[in-house]
Amino acid sequence: MRSFIDIQKRLLPDLLSIMHKRYDILQYIRLRQPVGRRSLAASLGLTERILRSEVEFLKDQNLISANNIGMSLTQEGIDLLDNLDGLMRELTGIDVMEVELQRKLGIRQVVIVPGDSDESPWVKSEIGRACAACMKKLLVGKNIIAVTGGSTSAAVAEKLVPEFGDKELLFVPARGGIGEDVQNQANTICAIMSANTNGKHRTFYVPDQVSRDIYESFIKEPIIHEVLALIQSASMVLHGIGDAITMAERRNTNQNDLDKIQAGNAVGEAFGYYFNEEGEIIHKVLTIGLQLDDLDKIPNVLAVAGGTSKAKAIGAYMKQAPSSTILITDEGAAKMLLKG
Image (cartoon, one colour):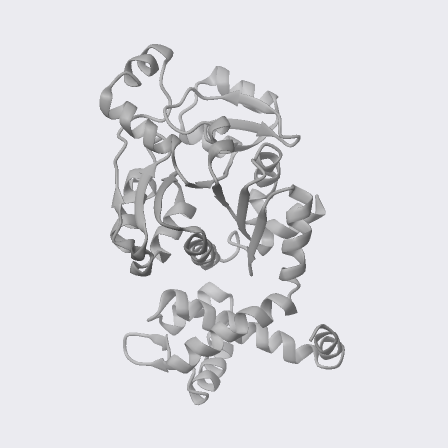
């Protein structure tokens, strides 16, 4: 197959670019259906004239249907897209990139989805879908899943389905909230995950960062102690990786700590730890919830983050990540990580 693809790239390069374009169109329709033509054109960076001809072709092939609400995939379109996934990964070299990046980072596995979520917001939904598929393979029997907040974790929640319900699932926030949008808070994400999978969830209404006195007081509370015990006995952790300065600003970090983070050239953040490009811890926020050391005891650690702009943050954190980590990312971040 590889030699045939190489020959095709040399003799029929236009064919491959057309295939890639039509694959992207079908992929986006699957994620957002029913979707209008104007929205589709804007999201894919195509003119409406070019998209119109592509849509007509796909309709003639009975791969999509259209009505006054928008376009959707037909069953033939769904089947074709499922069959194309593996081929497109090989055509774009993603399968090779996954192996190379997994070796470079020294972690358990890397899963890469096509595209760059910095350029195409719908790619984040694909990261969510890939993460959901990965979770399904790993879940067995009784499961406690600790989840951090963030838009990428929220994208994963959207892709979980009732088929997960044949397992016993309990979703718990991995840490306190940082005052972000309600839909991106861990409590909200856990509630959505449990609803989508017919599972259960626990809430954890504590602030993300506290003073030492408040910390000592909180962890003595029976309800807090109970949730912390659940978090630390999790069989799976799902977490994001943030840009250091962005996360510091979201936390309303005081000026002294912000100066420390900037002076230390921190580029990434996870679990309240700030890392420089060498993976050294520059600053640690006193938080209630999962700590970096706890990850070594958890069998399945799923890190989800994408976009070229996140590459440095991902690379920094991965120098501290446990070897059991599975990274789910996109092509944009993966290419930058391999270059680095």
